[in-house]
Image (cartoon, rainbow, N blue to C red):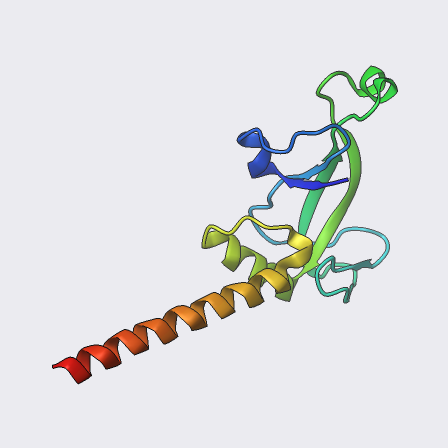
Length: 135
């Protein structure tokens, strides 16, 4: 089963029955569950009242039985997922730059972004060096 971001829903992408979908959070919140949770990105333990990002999730009905229970186009609730404050910072910074990615791969996305930025800076430095040599 695929996990689909809410932005993908707005554009009609990957809306297959059985997919798990989530809403993109707007801000940090505190963990209000009775038990501690694990960050879905770094797998660190998050304790009660810690600062987190909460991803509310649901599943698109897969079978006729699920459609009968939840209605056509209904939402089957799934347990929320959480990112710790550090991973949440990375998530919001990447999302603000226009990246669309699976929140459970925030570190991988950040490392890819870092590599792309380093390559871009290297190309700019080379171009500047060539310009200086030619002048």
